[in-house]
Image (cartoon, rainbow, N blue to C red; front, side, top):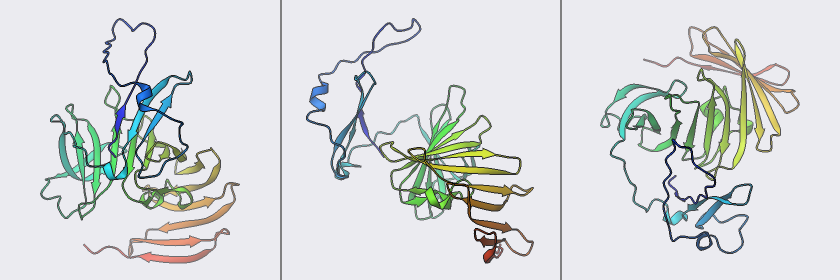
Length: 290
């Protein structure tokens, strides 16, 4: 989502000797932007400003949000230093793009489009379905050493995170709406430690925390007010395939479970279990024909 931002900064004290400070004058005053009493909420199609203040009361930034009818009408500026490449696969954990293709061959196929900066670092990765519709975008963040410990996924349609990754997320708390973002936080080894879900105005809605063991992980999920909603555990086999997901309520009591088997004559066998561990449904997923 493209936004237009006006940032007003007030600096005090002295800058460091090795710092560069640039000051730009403007006739635009704070009183010209924010008039009247603030509103608790606005309609979706109403243009508005969002002001952020320091604890001292000083204005930190003012962000302008256009009305729905005005979005997309403004001219987009393309940077000549940015390069776009197309790929069939993208691994965000390792920040790897695999199986490069041409723009022409990407038509009619689901694919990823990577935008690289002048240094060759991936800035954004867009995912398109076979019909050419963009479904979500990875926004990467890099430090001075060219490493990333955090990235955002911006979604353009209503989705469910548990359908994208059943191991990390649970159906109880994984709804995503258009414009929302999932912020992934990684450790130095590239393992996901937590995920926070924000709306388009960066209001936190819920978040996940993950703890890993030798052959499994535990996922806990909370509302924005840090109230625990539930948890689940995932057990993996020697090939790192999930063999059992067990779901618990906020009190740690088992709700249900899903077991996976991988026989030679089928893709997998999925068993649904009740809160007593009894199988109530079993499905066989046949192998795909080559």
